[in-house]
Length: 373
Image 1 (cartoon, rainbow, N blue to C red):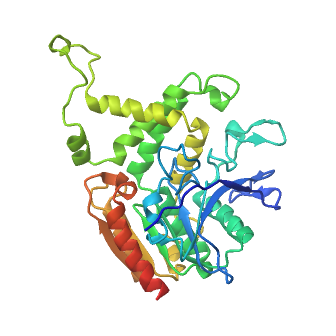
Image 2: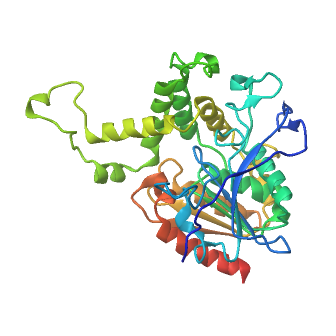
């Protein structure tokens, strides 16, 4: 197996102006940031689309420079001889609509006003993200995808692809996701948004000429991080360890456990690379996720899936529990489709799809071998 090496992020702006969203609202123009790995064949039918999660980006594999300390976020699965084999497949990953890593979103400049969109950016859906990705694939000359794959919010995109563009897919692999967001998950997201709203620097989203709401975004990330790991993962990593405690500090209010330091670190880390308004809009898009919304029923959406689906869960995931991935399979089978369930056995919780690469390598490779014959 080999690695991708040095890659670059490219950009595409569709000629379609304005860009019309599901709501009927429009964007005067649109830019899409993306990366590709491997080579598109002459028939244009060896594509694989990778869809990222909430705070992800287009940089799924390889390095941007020799000085990079870490590769792309799914690098162990993408490359020569790997599950998403770039000797066979043309792998594409784009930053989603509403992101802040090159694709048009709330932090982008509105060409009409010359200022960042901020809260004037229209609300969008997971389906809107998918329609943007379709425009990119058309531009790249991709006629058919061997599969579309992604975890968490990425898995939501996978399901919408299978429903709205079934003729373009040969298969779909949603991981650690659901067909519609549960009330508890919406509650987690709203709590994170409130953390941003309550930061005095948020200023109704008009903070781009001053200090951004760092504390609010950091707190939102801390809350989110708690949901990404299982109780076992937290205990295994930190237990009740204190952070450099002296005996005389035991009864000090601000004496920290190691787990507290970790949460603070995760919050500070995200603030350096992410935009608070984008976080608000992306979590709202997740809340609105319901594949049955455009149809008469939830079941009707599953009837439209006409490709084999591999639904993968993580055994200890309590943010998107495995019953949700199993429901995807049962609904597809109930409506006459073809679907399979596999489980990643992991103590890491929802984060398992970003950690357990060995298990995913085997599961995904086996499924794609069946699809490609």
